[in-house]
Length: 188
Image 1 (cartoon, rainbow, N blue to C red):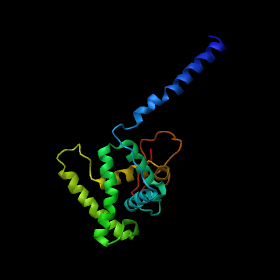
Image 2: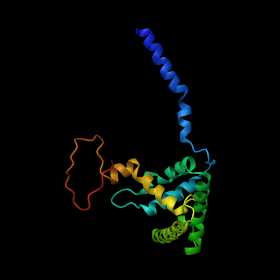
Image 3: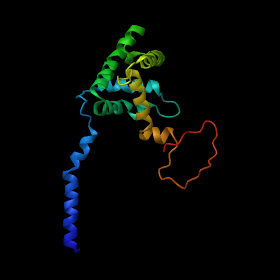
C-alpha cells in the first residue's frame, strides 16, 4: 500500500465515522421521554434539595457539584414520560408539603425545616415504594431526587476529588492496604 491509498482509506474511514455518528448517538436518547423545560428556579430548588441531602461540611456539598443541573439532564434525557411526570409533579409537591408544614415555600425554609420536611418525605416515599404492587410504576419522586443527588454528586469531579480519595493516574496494585476507621473511600 502506498501513501496515496493510505490517505484515501483514512479519509473514507473518518468520513464514515463522522457521517454515521448520529446513528450511533441515536441510542442515547429515550424515545418515550417528552420535552421538558426546567426553569432556573427549579434547578435552584433541586440544588437546595440536594444540599439538604448532602450538605457541605469540611468537604463540599451537593450544591457545589451543581447536582440540580445533573438532575435536569438525567430526567430530561433518560427518564420515561411517566417518570418525568412523577418527578415534575414532585417538584411542585415540595412547596405544597412545605406550605402545609411550616407555611413557607421550600426555598424560604431554614436548614432545620428543610431537613424535617425531607425526613417526612423519606418516610412517605418508603411507605409508597413498599406498597407498590406493580414494580414497573415509577418510584416516589423523593426517591428519584435522592438517587440522582447521590449519583450526581459522587460521579462529579467535586465528589470524586474532594470527598473521595482519588488518584488521577493509578499506580501499582496493592491488594493489602491497611484501613483505619474514618478514612475516605476510593473514587475509582
